[in-house]
Length: 119
Figure (cartoon, rainbow, N blue to C red):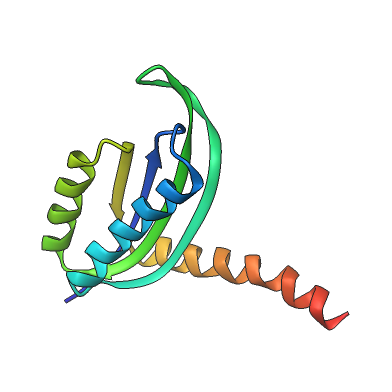
């Protein structure tokens, strides 16, 4: 049975736009190769960190929401640890309430765009 997960990772701010996109694509490919179903992803862009990490005060944030088997998380964890472009990452399993909240949040993000188009 597939569980639903959410992963947020922070990449170092010294990356160019191209390098950042390549890193995101690398992890997206890892998920698809392991038969994970990517439900949603968001690029949160460059954000200030709450506290410095490796003497850096900002980082590029990216979110993946996906369905996969538990073994995929272990492989993803290994790849995050090996990649020097990734400063921090966090993967959490979503329960039914978190899944409902996530779906609601996505639908609210789409709603304003549709309203503008209809007007």
